[in-house]
Length: 169
Image (cartoon, rainbow, N blue to C red):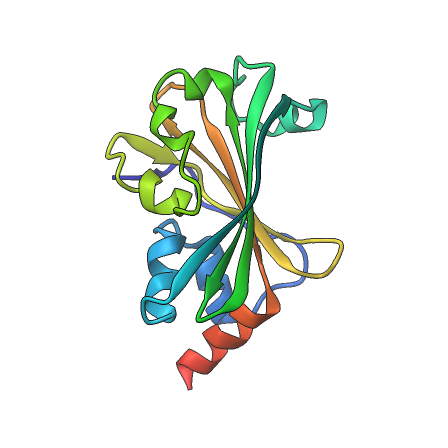
């Protein structure tokens, strides 16, 4: 079970009430997207590569990751053929040598579906904000107790926001 570590506070202009629920949810975004898409959810892997951890990224980590490099995973999640989420995950090599080893070679499978199978993980409360392009984004950390956390950042694209609103009418 993934347990929120603290209660989030959104930054910037507030999103609609329905989008706010999605942004601040601590449940599986992948599972919620699958339901919204009537099972028609696809993952497009755009890139996966190792690179040094940047200084500004180190400052984001709730505890020192203990790694000098991260595996970067960039994907688009498509619901019913439309781009709904752009996601970028940073997996420190220290985590990849330990608990996150099964996450190295996911290919076109969603990271979220795998993360929520780890019963020992804790998840930080999602931090929501607007990007420079005006899209709503959020990020949170996943870690097993005091283990090395990974960062998952998601951008909520306009097509998803429209679909969320349509699902309520």
